[in-house]
Image 1: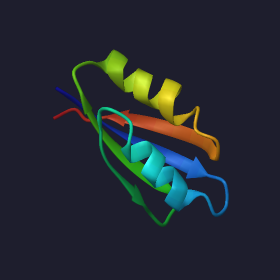
Image 2: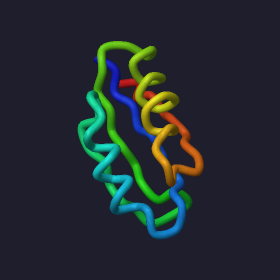
Image 3: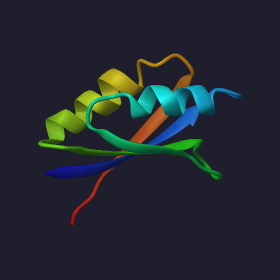
Image 4: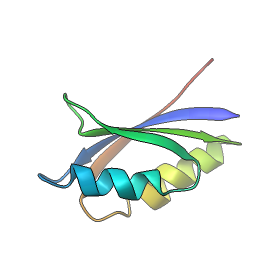
Length: 76
């Protein structure tokens, strides 16, 4: 099992809508609106690093209102 955290920058005023869209993606366990350099953090648990890429690059980045993402894979 691979755990990853996706940091998401959103357009102004879009965080609530984006959280709901992101949480509906298969493999995403949770999404939280946060304060700081990013607007949301999503936690994904999937079978492979390729599945992490699918979630971040294909699904999350395709959502209207997402400006940028950074993905971190947990090492433990």
